[in-house]
Length: 248
Length: 322
Image 1 (spheres, chains in turn purple, red):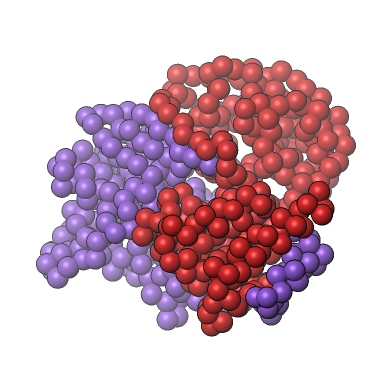
Image 2 (cartoon, helix red, strand yellow; image 1 turned 120 degrees about the vertical axis):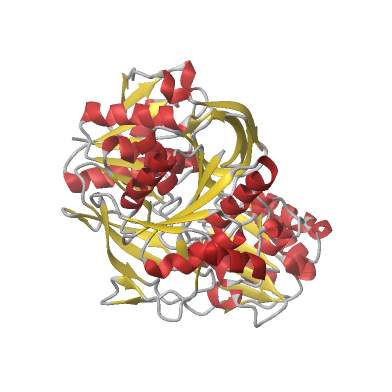
């Protein structure tokens, strides 16, 4: 089985978010970048398929050279090959078109991407790859098994979960649950050394338009002070929630 | 060229999110000087949608579509868009709508802006305000394609009554076998509990509650309020509560009217996930807990004393205001 894991290069979850150039660009100053958490759950599940079922695992990112340390980290965790599509990731549709080319050229059986990136939260790339390739697609995936050419997939739905079966090729929008948090791997020294020698192929982008443009960013309005209520005066809290906040 | 809205239902009853996207579509249509057409797949009564501004409902009744199937549903909506020559398509942020929207966008060659929180800033060029960076920022996104898909955030716009015809019209899209590549074998949905996505009030517990055996009072509080229960990431990682209750940046997003956090310190990742909630209450014995900076109301105190009292007071309040 050939697996491709799509890796988004995103600011660490603890990052302070600021913008520059008249609030039109994300300020990367002092920001540490990581593998998108939703992608990391998928990558870790892919490692399981590699170790238990002999799958090969490639990772791919659409971005400039600055994203290579993130791909190297994925190689250090255990992926076999990395591909970087050398272009700026301008919007979800554009990224999906780039990845579709990689998916088609590589003849992958299983493509795992995160359900969304934690920076732009578009949540559209895996579904768009499925739309463009015609492959089966399951989003918000929390369980994945493959037997021969058939996958059994569990996805989170509002208020529960749903299990289905689908033939490969299959595109997955993954999240926590694909593996547990405690299953995530920190690359060890041997992995890091080996990752330096693994192939990282840079490919040129395909011609594609841009369907959406991020025109301007805004920070949320500053929050007012908290109203403290004494622990022996719960009546006041009930009164505030009823008369002031009007939520009960 | 009406505005087309996908109104989801569950068990032949429209979801709350369906009424919200209908209300939103009505105002977008007013901006564009056009009407609202809804697509309803094995849904409720069209007149119900009429009360929220829908002029026409394309009703699809088809046994093959009795359970949600993203590819087939996207195909139905695409055909409705083409029939109506709609330029703006509006969907919700439910798990199902977020599943089908990217497929629909590809089929329509349409730009898609998800997590939209307000009416379009401008209709030409078409610009919408959406959340980004996990609720730590907003982005103004311009959709440049002829047909546009807008995903409205849950509970961002509200439900607004607005009488319109709600005329029903049978719609029979053509479905192909390739729409049904995924075979659903089991659906496990808790029908007796409010889901986090639909809840108006969410009650959440953190590690400050010391162990899973102490969740009884969280559930009691949720029951009094008709709320959903949730938890912080450490609590789900420790296995005290199921993953499905984990809210935060890598868990479920919460956009409720009221969010009550008990013994949750308020790590930046947790706050990112719950920030879209309108009113936040924190109960924590540590006055330095970061959550106090993000909350509207706070009680510095021992949850094991405060929460039982709060339950008692809310019961009194409910019986006085019944």
